[in-house]
Length: 280
Image (cartoon, rainbow, N blue to C red; front, side, top):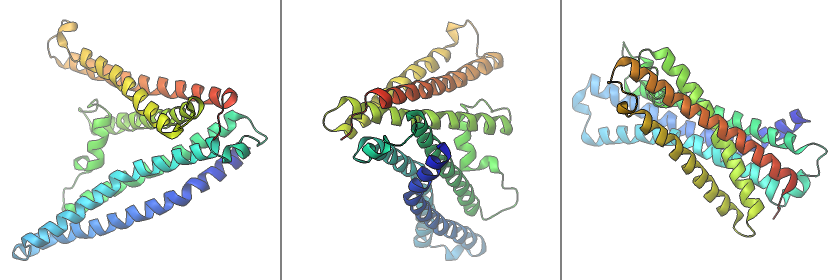
C-alpha cells in the first residue's frame, strides 16, 4: 500500500513541480547564454562590451541565480500544500477512509516530498555550478571548489572541512539532508497542529507555529554556538586544537537539533492524525 500511495503522491506533486522546474531551467539556460556571451565578448573584443551589454549580461546571470535560489522554496510550498490539502481539507474525508494506517499515509507524504525536494536541490546546485562555469567562459584551471555550490556546502558544514574539500562536501551534504528532513517534518507538524487547534485561519496558525517553533529551535542552537565560541569558558587560547573541537561540537549540535526536531515533529504529526484530526 505504501508503494501505491507514494507513486500517487509523487505524481501529484510532480505536476506543478515539473512546471516550476521547467521554468527555472529555461531561465537558467538563458542566463548561461548571457554569461558565456558576456565573458567571450569581453575576452575577444573588449571594445564591443559597452555598458549596456555588460548590464544585460549581468542581469541575465543574476536572474538565473535568483531563479535557482527560488526553486527549492517553491517546491517546498508545493509539497506542504499537497500535504495540507490531502489531510485537512475536504479531501481528508476520503484520505482517512483509505484501508491503511495513518503512519503509512504520513510516510508516503514524507518520502514523496523528500524526493521532490532532493530533486530540486540537485537541480539547483548543478544549475548554479553550470551558471558559475558559464561566467568563467570554461577557462582553463576552473575548479569546482570556487563555485557557488561549494560555497553553500562550506556554509552548511560550518567550516568543518576547511582543511580539505572532500570533508566539506561530505559534512555539508549530511547537514543539508538533516536540515531538509527537520524542515519538512516541522512544516507537517505545524500545519497539523494548526488544523487541530484553530477553528478559523488554520493555515495562518500553522504558518505561525512553523515560524515560532523554528525560531525557538534556532535560538537554542544559536545560544550553544555562541557559548562554544567563547574560548574563556574552556580555558584555552585560540589554538588549532580548540578550533577543531569547537567547530566539531557546533556541527554536531546542529545535526542533533535537526534529528531531534524531525523525530519529535513526526511523532506529533502522527499522534494528531490518529486522535485529533480536525477537517475543514
